[in-house]
Image (cartoon, rainbow, N blue to C red; front, side, top):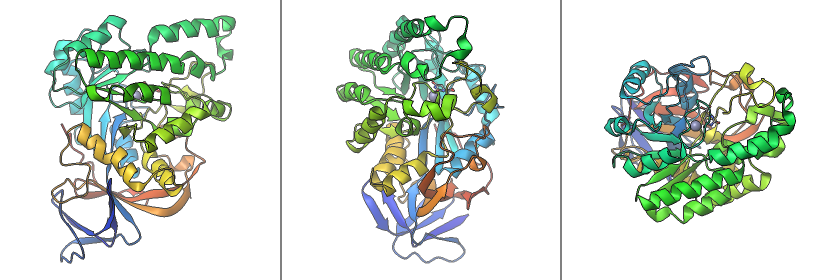
Length: 439
Ligand code: DOR
Ligand code: ZN
């Protein structure tokens, strides 16, 4: 297939440039003024921006084991619809991906079913360091320092074990909340609800899994990164305090991600959304949301990632603190960021850096993250003018709900190209599931 993107403006971290883009055999083969070529499909991109497809380093597509919440066709369709052309999937499946055998089985399950490119993480459970170190072709190894959905939290001593002994070629990514700190607060806050757990207000979730418990573990992880000279990526940072800590450990290779939901919701929103904004780490105060936007602007955040974590509506409607933590988001990451650009919160170049260029750079995907000659043809065409309300009926994810539903956003993906083929266009998935494993 040959595709010519005509009359658009290519965006990179350096700004925008009015050039045509020629795509052939899955690659970007030419980027220059006024390309004319016969025998190609021409996509008119006048008044549109051409971005490198977003790379979401943190999703949960729920296979194997929980395909009623999401499966690879639905999850990767949601990604494609949102202009995300590569995803890295987490290991908290059923069974958890903590053995090489489970990893291979997962690979088999996914093969030929993904509309976008993908990488897979393996999970560390405190006992499988050897197997983790032997794994080939993975996005990295995930460690949960506290229990979250999937119950993969590891004990205090095991945290150090991984950072001390992980193989050099492995990317370590960490869920940094302090379990003991959370347990203590849980006891304090919940004692008065003994015997009437169903009455616990869901807003207590943010008090129990407090910001301080997050900061505490981020500090610990950073110290370990320094002690063992081991780079670590901290997932879903929810406050400026955590970013302040991280900024002091940059030289030891500590990096971090921020999620759209922490940029969108605060504890004030529990009243309206209830458990539909319950996630780990939880939403924080309004000032923290503001602080995260400010930190993005200041360059203190490495990547935006969604932690796309769908659950069934019936599960989210359970009483008290019973609803599982997690919200979907992969299809709304770019619209939220583009809306931010339209409202002067960020420049388009900053969005490309956070969503495409830097994730590609940090994970060593040298042929992704830029619209340049020789790069993979993972591209998204966006229309910065379209202003549209996102309704529940629009949700592509199998969970069929979204905390962003009801909101109006300006700036939307209109064409998504994965490996040189159009997979999403004018609101519909049109291609075949040709996504490839990238590591
Ligand atoms: O909110 C969350 N949901 N946080 C996690 O750590 C896991 C995720 C999930 O898998 O549902
Ligand atoms: Zn997650």
